[in-house]
Image (cartoon, rainbow, N blue to C red):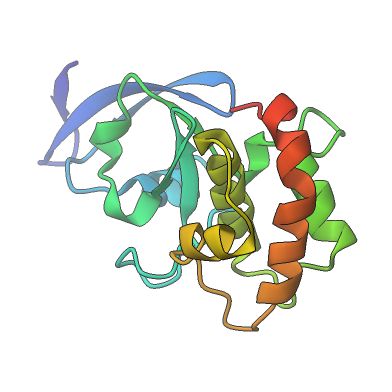
Length: 169
């Protein structure tokens, strides 16, 4: 990793795998992963909600585990694999969780949906879920201001068996 001074501030070179593709970027040490994704890499599916890790709108998968991108510095992504909502589909084929969210109309305004889906995919990768109450508890970091929780729950319950064999991240 090298530091360069192009604007009077030190930048750090990082390498990461993002949605299956290798990327090398230089970032200031204070830039969040969320801002890197949205502002530098034009992946605007990941949403900026509270910017404090309390709403889950910015949830992405880091090495297959769900994380809030607003709480990570971009330099922490160096050497890791990041999957955003844009990286879940395999070409035109949607991820099983994406298909279930559509089937169950598990969104209203849609703002929280990318974070909800990434979190649900991460939940599936974590292992067996012990029913609806367990899903509610483990998804409690993802808020939906529209209140589509019953549809979100139904979508996750339906997709979990498919995700065990189809989790791509």
